[in-house]
Length: 230
Image 1 (spheres, one colour):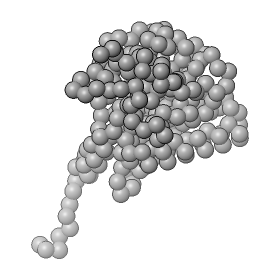
Image 2 (tube, rainbow, N blue to C red; image 1 turned 180 degrees about the vertical axis):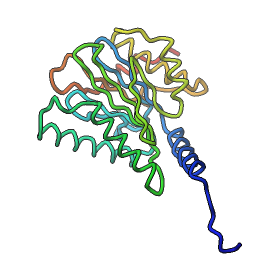
Image 3 (spheres, rainbow, N blue to C red; image 1 turned 90 degrees about the horizontal axis):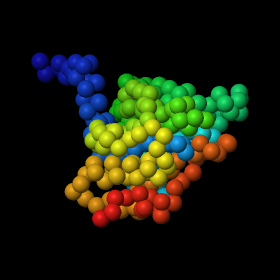
Image 4 (cartoon, rainbow, N blue to C red; image 1 turned 60 degrees about the vertical axis):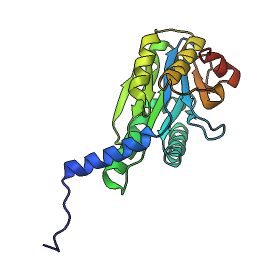
């Protein structure tokens, strides 16, 4: 019997890979996105001032990610290149959050199934529309699963707690200040045992009022003012 190969059922093999990816993502800091009258606000816990978790993908499309930085940074760069190529080859209007989310889902699905180890990442692709009803947000998981989110979404290891915290305070058409305050408060409430300061938060928005490049970062003063007092 010494020559018998070690056997793992396909179900167990995929479960082990999924558990591995989820544990890696859980070690990362979470992100919240909330739609508002002025656009889409994204807030992330991020102690680094230079290694961004929220970035611009294209004119009116943003990218946010939780997990292993080098893995999601490679995905971000690939997304920027894909968007630029599609916009140059066809039309800028042909570059959409849905098409980019589908491309990410296909890439992550292939990696999860065929590579030595899955990517330890969870992604969010958001696109601001001309109206609140036309905003789009797509959550892409480590295994290539993709879901269409409405109103707000949380990603990362504390996503369930964050989602519940945002749901309690969310209302359609809220202001930029209200959305930023809601996102920051949810991140604070997710772990009440620690103190979260403004310098440990990264915030940006997709500004509905901008004609082309809608992405802009929010100032440290805006973020600090959004944190709960005390």
